[in-house]
Image (cartoon, rainbow, N blue to C red; front, side):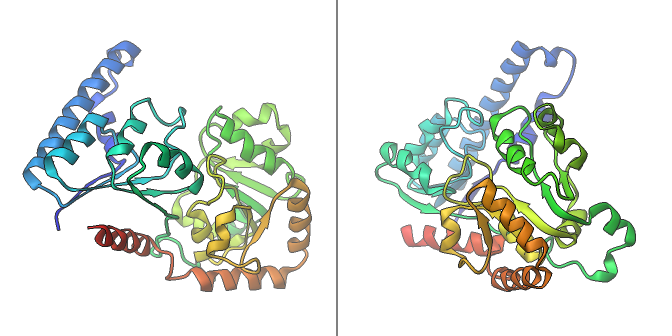
Length: 329
């Protein structure tokens, strides 16, 4: 079976093509050159598909493809068209106007949040739509042996509560995460992440002392998950019913987590598996409880690790998608 895979790594290729000369920093020139690069990229990929004649064309989000390119691939290659959507297709912050026009050309759509399916179904009545929830890399996320953790690691990363993730610059999504974290800022809270966390401090000055720096590398991140008594897990607010792969990553490292409640968690986990909250008061109560019940916290982390380990990897995610593709051919 021939499969042409297009991923969002193409963004980096495009940025490399555009470059960063002084003239190219001039917005009209930059926009024109970007459009020319996109047109060249789309033409080249369409030609590759004509040559390869794939049975399946798989794309993650829009991957810099024009709707006309998607349409041409479908009509000229007569292949099964598959799209995996990780973001709300109608979120204007993430997409230009073109992307939603591509949806009607797909036969299978893997959707990260069932809420988006309500609108997708209206414009793509023929497609089979499935929920997908991602996975984790066991080579990266696993329990860190005690011998690999130094006193310096404990001093820098150890804390009662940690959070690591984007502040989304000045976008509203960052306010959601920051406001939730402000309710537990009176504890030993440590925050790592990029995208201008400093912007939040003019509204939430209590978080200033909690911010420790930009994104951690994977080695430090896995240590953080172990050394934090509580890992705060705050999915992006663009998703309403589901969650992000961080659930699996923290569990794979045998870290304890409290997560902003999402209904689809219960498709995979029981109430006794993972701690959730639906309000600020509930969050504060559960933080106080689990910080004072070490044995119970550690037992829950171990149980969730055993439930996740080796069962929700990216390989499992890919196998599930390929199985559904094969069933649809």
